[in-house]
Image (tube, rainbow, N blue to C red; front, side):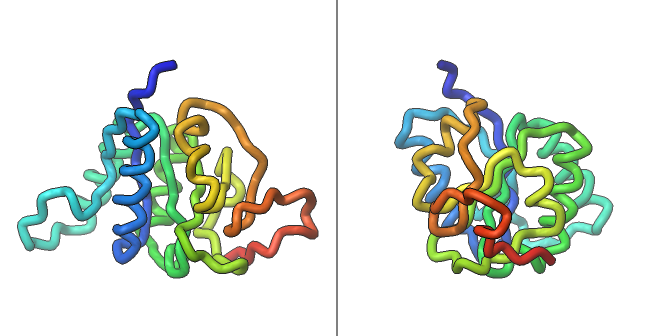
Length: 160
């Protein structure tokens, strides 16, 4: 199985520690991941680019990725850039995976549209499955605690 993948990790900036942890877990599982998202490991020169420049950068980086991962934390649903990134991933036909961050509550709010477009949605405790999911395997949808959702009434997910 080829373990080299180009990914884009959409996240709320203050959840960067979860991005780094996710990348470390994938590396520990033997995956060679090229991460095209903007996180703390990317050089920043202190300038704030204009909205058109940011949009162009995000479109290019999402386009270069085969898989789009959205880390869902307590404030992710409030971020307009996360919504924009999800929209672009859908437009580009990317495999979309939702991963609840460590410590997410049962009522974690999903970003607009993620529940409808994610091929998988898993809890942080199921993160060991992420490499297989990136490689194309599907697992049942989960709650933030990793419990498999068996029916619509078992879903404590609140949509925004």
